[in-house]
Amino acid sequence: MTHHSDHRAYFFKIDTTIKKIRNALQKQLIEAGFDLTVDQWVLIDHIYREQGISQNGLAELTFKDPPTVTRIIDLLEKKGLVERGLAAGDRRKFNLFLTEKGQTTYSEAFPIVAEIRRKGWGDLDEADYQHFVRIMDSIYANFT
Image (cartoon, rainbow, N blue to C red; front, side):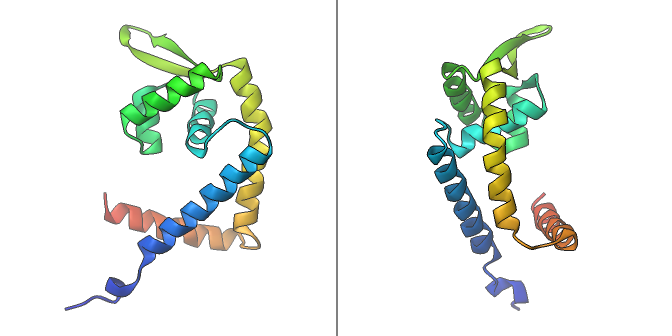
């Protein structure tokens, strides 16, 4: 017995929309002169909001595997945007912080990100947002 959702390619719709947004953001970051990928921005954004987050915590929060997060953090560290600090009581773990340059980069790049978000949202209103979040949370929960 088929279900009505069997023929609804919602995953494809979500995936193509995400790719479109990522491409638009990447293009804007490059045009503004930022040496950042979207994935690097995502980590900077989370570190900004949770200074001192662990690499594992960051991996969980961003749904990236730990080796990928380590690789991106290594690049951000080389660029002078992020620094690792030893976690209290455990020399094998690091807490992540934005450097002064990282803070400045965040402050300068955030308006570009905000503009992409505004453009994507267009004239949708708060009720649309609430429906969107409810639907996405429901799909997410179905896989949890």
